[in-house]
Amino acid sequence: MRFLTCVNLAVATFILVVAEQAPGSSLRLLEFAPGVTQVLTEDEKWTLKAKGQSFFDITEHAHVPHGPFEKRQQQPVKYPTTIQYNNTVRRLVKRFDKTEFITFLQSFTTFHNRHCTSDYGKNTSIWLQAQLQAMISRSEAKTATVKSFQHPFAQSSVIVTVPGKSEKTIVLGAHLDCQDRTDRAAGRAPGADDNGSGVVTLFESLRVLLSDPVVAAGKALNTIEFHFYAGEEGGLLGSQDIYYHYSQSGRDVKGFLQHDVGGYTAAAKKAGEREAIAIAMDYADACLIKFLKMIITAYCTLPYVESKCGYACSDHASATRFGYPAVLTFESEFSYVSPHIHTPNDTVDTLDLDHIVQNAWMSIGFVYELAMANLL
Image 1 (tube, rainbow, N blue to C red):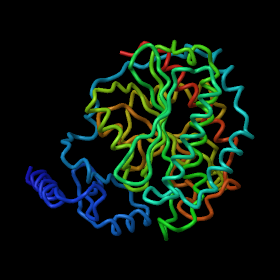
Image 2 (spheres, one colour):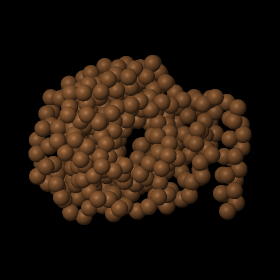
Image 3 (cartoon, rainbow, N blue to C red):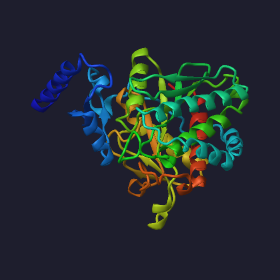
């Protein structure tokens, strides 16, 4: 009890210190585990990130009370226990074309970097929103929209909404920012795996999903959203803003699948490990994990492997933080994740495109089965 009191006092003191400062101030409040916080400067924060430390930057949300991490879900969701749309999903996944993935990634990685406070990061969001709008305009989904979500930093998040018959919402997500660990703002960071692999998975999954006449006509039972998050590397900044906003406005997110570092398999294969899709078992929704395992088994030729990612390791943690069920997948057991991330060497030629396509199969299965389900 004394420790919790000290933590609450530290947060309260921090709020008073920064109350008069503008958003994005030089002092940042980081959370490294539930209730474990520290005030650092902006530069000190990024130094920790360069060393591989994960955290929430809760500076803009320090006033939000949180209970135990695993007990924040607003209401349990009853997910389907059997596959219902096998024929439709299998027909849709045949429409993926690996060359489309390559073409997108080659363009996406030409930005010098995608750091969230840089002009590069800002321009990446603008470019991505334009590509998504063009895709929607070419489709029959006349009610689908793409909008930017602004933050206190330069880069914006991008949200695509495909309305359904209800406001119950299924989300696919990936962060769009990246940076070089030695020079975050000016260093070269193509970010092909981290997280071009996730962004292209969402981009191509949206293209295929919009080709389905039921979804395009707005006749899915539930609304579908594709989230491209800004500022993940800085402490899940963009996704925290979005899920805080959703929690305040009463948004009903029934399930969220996050894609992060999903395209490098060389290390696992070299170690003699079987290629698989890794599911983060920590700080994620157990019922949604069970559903995702069923989806992978049904729609992918790759198996899944259970792994751990750590506290605040990707944007699914923001959804969990604000009470929404979420799950994360990545490229292999965590110890075999790409050594090239946050360097100039995170390039398209290091990726396993066949593995990324399997991620897209999983995404279509996940979102279609849930979009058509009567979720309670």
